[in-house]
Length: 324
Image (cartoon, rainbow, N blue to C red):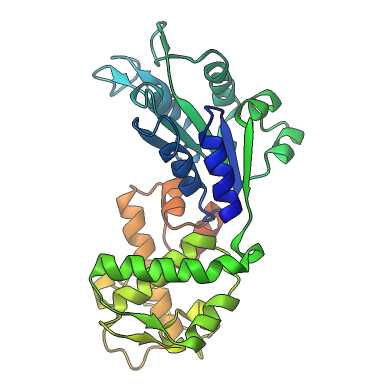
């Protein structure tokens, strides 16, 4: 990670466009913020936009702005991100999810540094630095004609590849200690530590969710602990301990209401660990679906899982979301 941060520091010295590549959860936005914070634009705004979370029309409005009457609901003029981030940095996360139509528009913005609000013909000059990120192989997308080669070379002036955590195990211990200290200070605990056996389990885990997964695990551990707790292996999540349920959760009667989130964690001696985990998972998905009005893409992103994984969970728990 020190090598990555060194690349970020050197990139910050120029105003060149940067492409950050890495799996979900590896810390791409953290690197982008580091570049911004150490650049001459640090006094300006840093605005992040997830390109995979919007339809074409909404993404165009978000990035370029719109004028009154441009579409239903456009009751006032609105500046887009490229205007509001003036003299700052725009972080385009998951740029590989942009449609071909949006890629053409982005190429023009990158080349000419001009934007046109949706519904307008007036050109506006912009003064922003662009940092893009992707968790997909853009070269393969180019081969399949799903991503424009000319746009690829526009955003890849400086390249930063973040390897997954499984390929840099020496980073695991510092991350554990960082998040322990961070969440202890945030929650107000004075001294929560890890027993050597628990730390060894964390060190040996593959961490498919990368840094984001470590952060979530440590946050959960600290949140559930009391001051002075020495966290043992049994305190770790089931996934890390590799435990499986002894028996499946009994099927709920047809038409019965799903278990309430508030019931989780109560004394349920007759429930297996897997049953409690299923109950918790369903409640979390239900809360996120409600928060994002059933939007599949935004719900999946908030849970740091793929759309296909979310669809599988929805099918498993008999739930439904709304396709975009």
